[in-house]
Image (tube, rainbow, N blue to C red; front, side, top):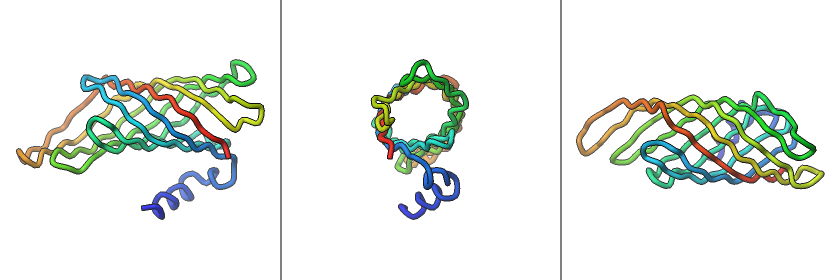
Length: 162
């Protein structure tokens, strides 16, 4: 599994290998009809607008993968910035009640660097994340398709820049 992850980084995110890279942890909540929380880690490069986050959903015990592009990134002052993002989300789990879900993301957030050398970053963002997924209940042997138009994840985290 580690080899696949490293290979994906090399192929899809080559700037992580040659630029200053931020590695951190994050937590958050999804405001949906079945409100839930997650914890995970994130990775971002200084030279790429793309960021990646992998998190574990505490309620349904699923794994979430998020790819975000910070397409607008503007300074408010020397340390505080705001950004707009778009991206993709993928979620899934394999158990008695399994599912695979994908969605689009559109949101805004703030980040702040605590020191002049930009080695520690705190951030928070809110996103609209409609999704569609296939669900399978092994007990009932039923498949279903679900569309979730109103999902609003709110995440906050810290990144250490290497």
